[in-house]
Amino acid sequence: MSQGEPVGELTESVGYALKQAAAALRAGMDAALRPLELTVPQYACLELLGQRPGLSNAELARGAFVTRQSMNGVLRGLQERGLVTRPASAPHGRALPTELTTAGREHLRRASVAVRAVERRMLTPLTSAEQRRLHGDLAACAAALTLESAD
Image (cartoon, rainbow, N blue to C red; front, side, top):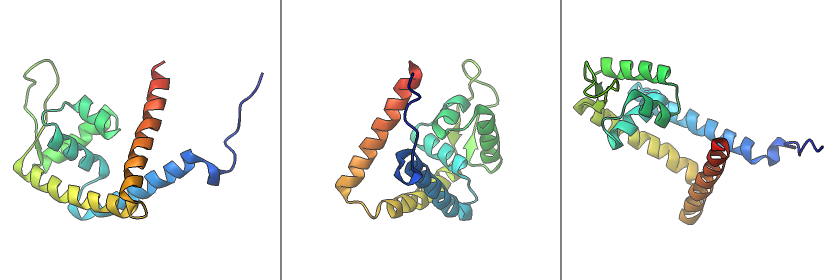
C-alpha cells in the first residue's frame, strides 16, 4: 500500500507559496486598516454588509471566515462604534439582520479604498491578463477542495 507523495521542498510547494501570499496580504491589510481602527474581520464584515445588507451573524461569519462566536464580538464592537445596526428582536426566526449605518458606510468606503491599494500593490508584478488568470486559478483550486470536502 503506497503512502503517497510527501510535500517535498517548501520552496516548490504551491500551498506554502499561497500561505506566504495570504500572510503578506493579511499583514498589509492590518497595516492599512490600523489608522481606521479596524481589524480584518471587522473590515470583512463591513464589506459584506455593504454588498449584501441584512445578512445574519451566521452568514457574516461564513463570509468573513470566522466562527459565529467571533462574529458576535465583531458585530458588538461595530455596533458600539455606531457603524452597524441590528434590531433588538428578530423579525423572522432567530436571525438578527445587520445593516450599515451612515457612519458605517463612510468608514467602509475609506477602508475599502485602503484595502484595494494593498491588493493593487500585491498585484503590481502581474499584467491584467495574469491577474485575471490568477483569480480564475485560485477560484478553481478553492472549488476543487470545496467539492472534495463535500464528498
